[in-house]
Image 1 (tube, rainbow, N blue to C red):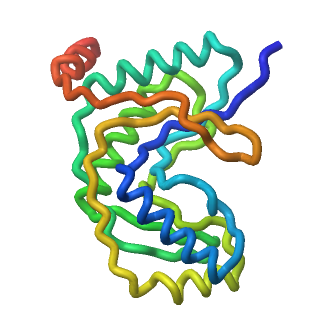
Image 2 (image 1 turned 135 degrees about the vertical axis):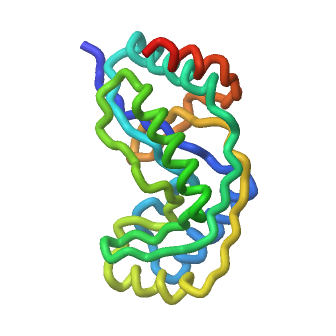
Length: 190
């Protein structure tokens, strides 16, 4: 019997944005010590699901390829930091980016032909998760007056698999191809 693996579909920002987020994570770790998502690369989670076996994984990859055929690149801006009492500090998109991201995420989630174990409804880039009260206070002091303006073109999604230690590793990229005819064909089927 095949083993169940946990997969995630996410958006990775461009390298320069990933490096800025990593620097923020490093800065937080220097004052707060280790914390949840400390080693996680900057990303925007779309969904998570379980897969049993290579055949099911190939079907998922095929679905993602088809879904990305009609998706256009997204011009995104993340411009504010927020701290939540549940132990999270993250970077949030501006209102326009939030709207287009939510629409894209919903289309991808609905197009997946697998039972999703997690759906992300609020796009964000985590700096830290599972912060205790003291770490949260340090994060608030460190970042609440920080100005951020992370702008990038999102032109792909990634498929990741969870490996040891709970970290995700990218196993596939799916580029947005802006083929509106493909979307029109899909809509005309209904």
